[in-house]
Structure formats: C-alpha cells, structure tokens
Image (cartoon, rainbow, N blue to C red; front, side, top):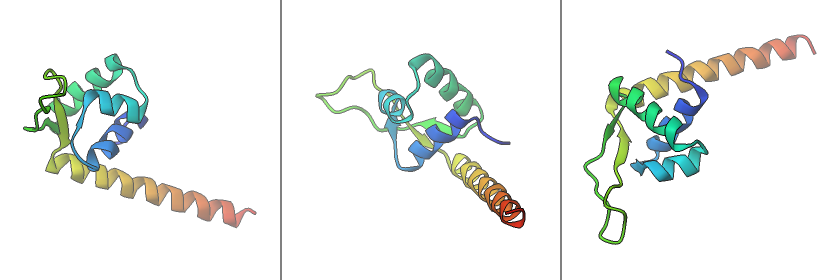
Length: 98
C-alpha cells in the first residue's frame, strides 16, 4: 500500500538508523501531533517498533527511540521500487511526446 509522503519520509529516516521522536520531527519537519499519531499507525502496522536503545545519562530520559522492523524495511523497499517504476514510465512518456 502506498505511504503518505510524511510516512515515507519517516520510514526513510528510520532506514538510516534508530531515531527518537524529536530527531524525526526535525529531520522530516512535522509537528509532534502528526508524528506521534503516525508512529502509532506505523507501530500498529508493524512497520516500526520501539528500539531497545535508551537515552544516555545527559539526555532526556523520557526519550524513546524507534526503528524499522524487517517487515517495514521490506514494505519501504517495495514502495521505493514502485515509485521508481512510475518515475521511469513518466520519463518515457515525456520523451515520447517531446
């Protein structure tokens, strides 16, 4: 199933490694309400999970880290492949009518 643009960006950010909510908000440029509602949906769909990683002693101890699940990485890869195919088809069509 295609992801929303924000879901896609969050999943891409998590593909690079575990991130806490604030890091995701600043990287993807979305607000906390949007992010945490989205994370709940992604958790329910088993695309992400809470990481066992915990904040260091100098960090906010309420911070939780998230990571892609194996299923999430597979779905993200499938979405990237789908978007790549659509982009190649669009380029071909444009070239045919140039």
